[in-house]
Length: 319
Image (cartoon, rainbow, N blue to C red; front, side, top):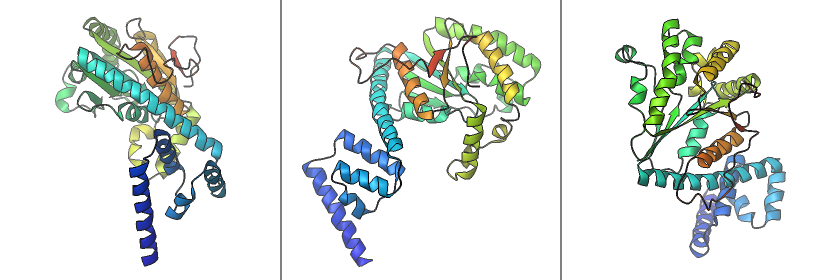
């Protein structure tokens, strides 16, 4: 044990010394971040990684899929570049007092929350908020449906990310019987008018629908049940999502038909691949919103049309 403690101290001193004299490049930090998620290494193994060949041999010895590791490394590199652009966007929004609302909708386990976390990871929390409202209180149930959502809308200079939104009443509530037919009908009549008022008042709204297949949803639910860090995500509503799949589809299509407008269109994100969905939804936001420094981006701002597309009745959907 004493020998191991000595080794730890020597290794830490070496790392600290190297950090002072040379420091880690951004690429090295990304490699480290990727490896941390992929494999557990002892300090002795870490000290032996001094060439690309040594790294490759170590990964092979631990049965790590190098192609997957490289894919994740490329993802981390691209994610950082897009996050840099998002910081530029936020600065512009702050300076000009703009109001941005980005809505994330989709079936349960579609990856909405994970995408939002990557969006806000490096944003200033003073002017970037996540809104994920719980079920309404008794008082809120007696209010105009949009009232509690309108209170959460962005203030000047803010970007607000809605992890589900007023569109709960378009799909989840009627499927689960949480609203009456009359409440649903009134909502469907009012929502285009509500969003038109936002448009006229200068609120910039982006509406994402994260689309996944039934098989992918089932796989993600199974992963949540077995992963102790994800079990909190499972709810009674989730448990009924698979058996109500067709009902969700019916209300989803009705929602698109009635609420996809020129001033507030639906943007479909094919989300079976979580990483692609995160990157391309970021790229879409950056592509349509103006900001200072956009003319010199760190990376391409053109979203992949195979992953992100504007809703159209004839377009193919995963769900």
